[in-house]
Amino acid sequence: MEIVYVYVKKRSEFGKQCNFSDRQAELNINIPPNPELAELYVERNPVDTGIQCSTSMSEHEANTERIEMETRGVNHIEGGWPKDVNPLELEQTIRFRKKVEKDENYINAITQLGLIMEHCIKQNNAIDIYQEYFDDEDTVEVTEEAPSAKTINVFRDPQEIKRSATHLSWHPDGSKKLAVAYSCLNFQRAPQGMSHDSYIWDLENPNRPEIVLKPSSPVITLEYNPKDSHVLLGGCYNGQIACWDTRKGSLVAELSTIEFSHRDPVYGTIWLQSKTGTECFSASTDGQVMWWDIRKLSEPTEVVIMDITRKEQIENALGAISLEFEATLPTKFMVGTEQGIVISCNRKAKTSAEKIVCTFSGHHGPIYALQRNPFYPKNFLTVGDWTARIWSEESRESSIMWTKYHMAYLTDGAWSPVRPAVFFTTKMDGTLDIWDFVFKQCDPALSLKDNGCFIACGSQLGTTTLLEVSSGLCTLQRNEKNIASSIFERETRREKILEARHREMRLKEKGKLEGKEDELREEETAVDLEELVSKAEEEFFDIVFSELKKKEAEALRKSKLQQPSLKSEEETEGEDETEGQYQVEGEDEPEEEGGPEETPA
Image (cartoon, rainbow, N blue to C red; front, side, top):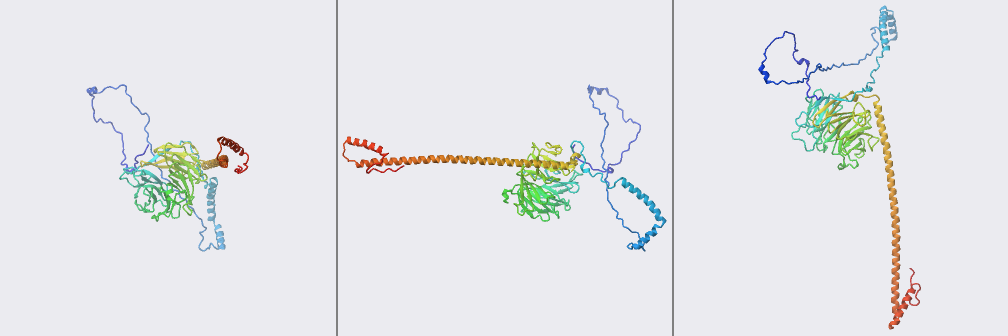
């Protein structure tokens, strides 16, 4: 059941208490029956009537005040010496002790105090007052109750034109407040008159926001400063970085200049672990990650271009849409991009190109969530397209674990701060999935439709729902850390083995392809040699035959010139026959006088 309105009122404001007493019955009016009225009604037979036999019950809740505990100590120093006795003089103190020990009152006092002290010593021997009886409270075995969650409060956008709740940030001190950023991410589709305000809500008063934050442009991301809970950092839709101090009011305290800000909306802002507590960095889809100091927001202190080709060209940069920074790893940070690639960076590198260490590819779309495991920082969670993936820094080619592909697009995700094996994901259809891969890996342990121990979920309709999960999902199980660590290590080893196997198969395929290419080249070379030999032979014989024909023609011409011109036809014919015979024979034998010499072929 959704709580729409909560009334907060003291018992003293309810009014005077009603007092009831017994008295005799009084007849105020008597109406006799009128038979004529019965003609206006029709008898209904049979008649069905529902009767509730159980007694009416009401539920009441009461909160008792917590007992504040204090620890105090006593430092006992020897003293109480008379004025005429110097405690630093050993002889005077010994003399005074002997004098006191002879006194009868001293003996009686020591006897009485000895009995009391003996009783206390016996109590200490029987019960160890310093024993920690609940030291294993964090590893209590979880009961067999089914995972569940219930709605605690719903924080609705107070504006008439509803906007999406794009980012949530818990108050660093006790999580009593919740900062919510509201904006419309539909490009050039924001309705006219839409408010730019974001709010800070008190969890105990969902009717009205506690503080209104008034930016110059809609805020997409909003983060509390972990060292100063009065300071908040926001990334705006126009690319500017804004900073609020709630002690100074609702207006922006510091704002970056347009010239040195991002050129696209700022989708990620994170506070850095620094001595001053004023350093932060931001990411945008323009492909730049910028470092800022809120004491001087006029321009960034450093800019890194997300160009994985390491040419430092803004045209080749990948749009950043999520950020991750772990305080225990101060030199490392990670960036999730629109192209589905996670870029691991080293903050201490000298050049912008050297700051990009490696990349992890596995998603088909933008990575909307990127977070390291709070217990095992070398493992991190990414949420994008239709699946969530768990990675290890030791395996770069593939993720070690992943969820099934859902029908709806995933929009966000986060690890549980108290259990290393539990994480949360949200989907486009309004479903919150709670995963516990120690309990189940194929399906979520709990799915909630449109709805630490408290979970805050923002929706596209501008409502922020506060949920309280069951104890099984927020209590550390026995040996869960060891089990989660062994699962991570096992999956990492499996991925390493698969990577080595794939690498070996690729090398074999490459070797086979190279061998085939060499064989084809040899065959082509052999074919080319045969063709060249055959062509050379043809050309050689063509040259030989052409030379023979030339020589035959010259021999005929010269023989005709040597014979007398006036001959009879018969003689001429006879001569022609003899010349023909002579020429045919001349192919084998050289001519004798004046004939052309024949060169060997």
